[in-house]
Length: 532
Image 1 (cartoon, rainbow, N blue to C red):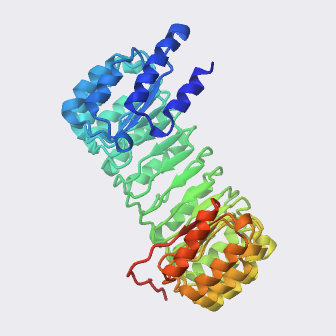
Image 2 (cartoon, rainbow, N blue to C red):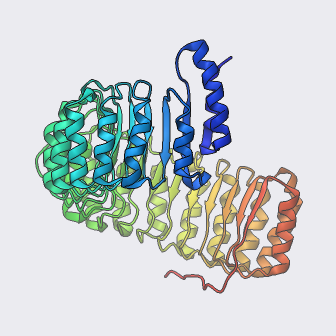
Image 3 (tube, rainbow, N blue to C red):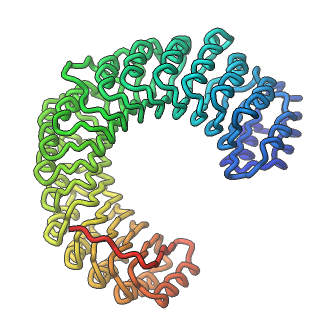
């Protein structure tokens, strides 16, 4: 019998109950009798189960060993942390995976846990996020672990995000980090470490040769990012780096050594603006393996997009498959500057240009250059009827043969822009999802969609909420969907379209007849937002 598979099935998806805990306890005794080792994994989530902590601890005491324990969102607090530590101590020789995220145990809880964790020499995965440890708790945790059996740990995954450790806490943690030679995944997001804390980390991160994933998001790093990026090359295994929400304005003027392993870089929600765009291009040029880049919400604007494009033109290789430039207001000129460079990204499949005020004509130029695209977000881009016609002119061509997801929400397509786009949708034979919400397409636009809907055989998601479709347009959609219900797999969102109870009832009736058709319709007094 495959006991590992059995336990995977029993505890999957956080659906464990106390009754099931008892069953697992009995099975685990039998397993231990045969294999002489514990395969038990316990996953408990208070929001799913509403299990009392005292009952849980009582149930856990049944085990002589545990390998995998997740106790999320229990609000264990300071008082119960010591009790929990005593329970965990009986598993010090078996525990491999421990998740105590979101329990607000405070500095005292950190000290209670430290003594136990230092004895867990098999521990590989440890999650202590959202526990309000503060600088004092991180210092206590680090101090105890540094001088304990923890030096022998094979820890590969450590999460300490949102514990308010500050500079003092990061100083203590940095000393501890030197001992974890096998660490691969490190999450220190939301810890208020500042630029000085980032500088301190640059001294110890290169001492972790296996480190592949670093999260330092939301830490007010600011200018400390310059030093961080300059030592990336000293982390030979680094593949993922998250620096989003750090008030970074530049990555510096110094040339970086090549960071040949970095694949995913998140710099979203910073403040690069046009002045910092050159440093972005310089860094990208030194990361030849980079395939996932997030520059969302950085106030790059048209000038910055042009600077970025000029810098990228000099890159030897652009391996990007995912690029997010949303919320940067790059405008038509910025999009045209980037279009030529994006054409060199032959592997680019996911592109987000949402909320950039680009307009349809310039976006059509981007489409022409990116032949491998499977997903593109063009929402909030002031695409009017004329712009929709320009897009329609390229959507049906070979350049878009791989396109599966298209978001045109919150533009100004209007009824006749929708007519132009609808005419070419049957040519997009791989398109599975299209967002057309808040485009004022009205009954005319809905009717034009209804005509081609049976020909869009791959389409599974159609979002038309906030479009003033009314009963006339929705009625036509009802009849079309009814006629092809047997061959249709579709989720249709018609919320806030004033379609009336009779039409809603008709759609709900269709939904009851087919498991492949899902209807979404929320109606209230809310007025649709219009975009110029």
